[in-house]
Length: 339
Image 1 (cartoon, rainbow, N blue to C red):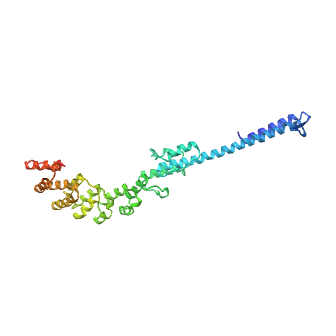
Image 2: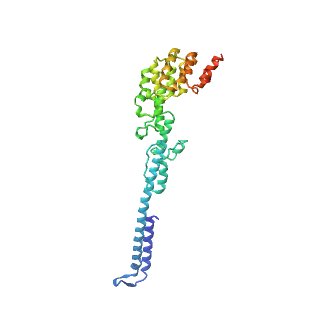
Image 3: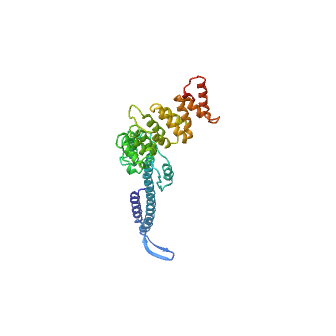
C-alpha cells in the first residue's frame, strides 16, 4: 500500500467521522483505571482513537517497509554479485569466492564459483546488458580473443594456465607482438604447453647454441625437427655426436623412439657417424640397443649385428634374430618390417 494514498484516505475518513460527530453536542467523561480524563465532546472521542490507530498503522507499515527495503537491497547487491560471478565463470578465473547474503543467490553463486562457462553465441547474450556490465565486458574479451586479436588481460589477474590467457598469448605470438625468444626467456609468465609449442617453432631456424640454451622445453616432436635439419638443404644445422646425445638425454626415450630417430638420421647423417652415435648411446641406455641393431642391419653391417646377437640372451631381440636368419637364407626383407 502506498503511504501517501493511505495517509490522504485516513485523514479524509477521520475528518468525515469528526464532522458526523458534530451533530451530537454530548459531553462524555472517561474513567481509565480510576483516573478521570477531562470531558471531551463526541467529535474528539471519534477522531482521537482514529488518529491513534492511524499513527500505529502507519508506524507498522513504515517498519515493514524499511525491512523490505533492506531485504530488497540485499537482493539487488546479490544480483550484481551474481553477474560478477557469471562474468568470472566466462573468463575461467581461479579461486573464486563470491559471498551472497540471500539463500537463493547463495545456491546459484556457489555453482557459478565452481564452474567455467563457454558461451556458444556471444551477441545474443548481451542484448539486455548495458556497455558497462561485467558480463558484456567478459563476452567482448572472449569474442576478441577468438577472432585472433590481442586483448589486455593484466587487470583481470588471470592465471598463466587460463585458456583465454594461453590463446591471447598465441595471438600475440602469431601477430609478432612477441617473439619466440621473448617468450622462452620469460618462461615463468607462460603456460608449459604454450612454451613447448613456441619452442617447436623456434628449433626450425634457430642456431644450435640457442636450441641448447632452451632445451628445457625440448619435446620429442622438437627433437625430430632438429634431427631433420642435419645436412638438410634448407636451414641446415651442424651438430656433434656429443650434442645429439645430450639432446637424447634431455628426454625419456623408449626403444621405439630410438629406432625412429635412427631412421630419421639416415636421411642426413653419414653412416659412420650414425653407427658411432647409437653405439655410444647403447652403452649407457639399454633402450637404445635395438636402435643400434636396427642401424647396423639398415646399413648392411650384418656381421657386426650378428656379433651382438650371439652374446645376447635367447629371449632377447627375437625380431632381429629372425631377420638375421632370413638374411642368411638369402631372403631379402626390409628391416623396417621387423621393428
